[in-house]
Length: 215
Image (cartoon, rainbow, N blue to C red; front, side, top):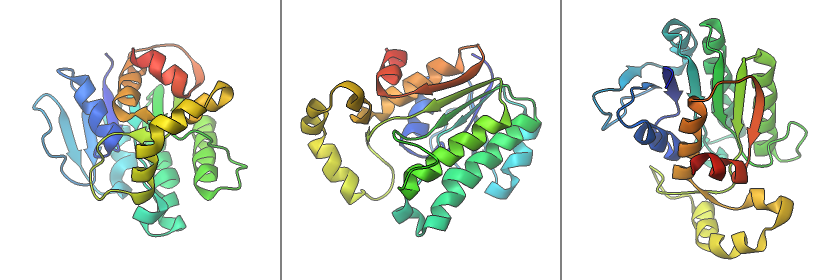
């Protein structure tokens, strides 16, 4: 497994990625201390404005971004974009400056720069800007509704959607399968599998591909 650095380690998927690394070390960069981090992992705590330089100095072989918030959590569209676009790009630019060849970034099903939905448009613009940086390999993870125990307060809408997921998933067939719910653990398993892969190019992974990688 190549040396990897993760940002967004405190969320549902990020925490699961660290668990999936098991005894293999991973560098964890966060704005505050990550509780319960195993001894083999390398913690780095710094304000986000320093992340670009820190990542460049670390020179990881793989950068994993599990960064993501919601407009409600962030408090405004501008604050949401500052995390889901600006901070993701800042981390990516640091990786490029340090010579990192491979980035894996969690995006969203339906991400599209021309979407009329602000959330999906931001995700799509982030994907496009990551492509423009020219990593040797870029893996874009586009899960549907994420299932799992999230840190922090329960999001009402997501809670309702998760309860309804078994019914709604059964109704989604064909090209709509990508909108089915998926567990955060499956997404994490796919990310760890991808971190060990070589190859070149931009690769988009939606639900069926994520599940295949996780098996």
